[in-house]
Image (cartoon, rainbow, N blue to C red; front, top):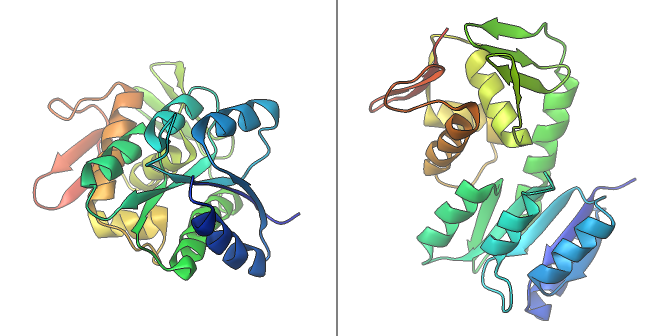
Length: 229
């Protein structure tokens, strides 16, 4: 079955344009025009692989929609934001978006981002053959997609899990932001390296870690991040 993509934007022309390119590439596409309809759709039938979600919508905007989605759903989300609204992009990433595309955009760029996010998920699943990674206070079971801290399970998004694995598989190694982007987002990622900082912050929060006194993920100033074994 082809990947199922849900496009959510209150502008019908944008939905139709993006949908036409995705359909031409073999995706199954649904369209909605507001955030409340998304929540109802996912509650009723959660079988969606990825949502393309506009930030600026009436009634319930994209950021609040994503915030509500993350209470019960881990579906991949790519946000559509205005080029000038950097705050929207950063908030969207902090709430749990996988990626973002700024308007105006090329529909081909959107298709490329969708493929990159879905390919990253498939690659992670296909390469999941290792024994669990066990360090002081944390265990990462790659095959079972399970993480525990001090014996308690930790709920991570798919992207957070991939980021943790990239770091924990090479403890002590310092990864520059662009290296983490290559490993987690893929070489065809179009966005800014700053996306790494936002998701590392989210990952730390989920693990109960601290940037000031890190147990697991240490910031190496001017370079990037490393996992503390």
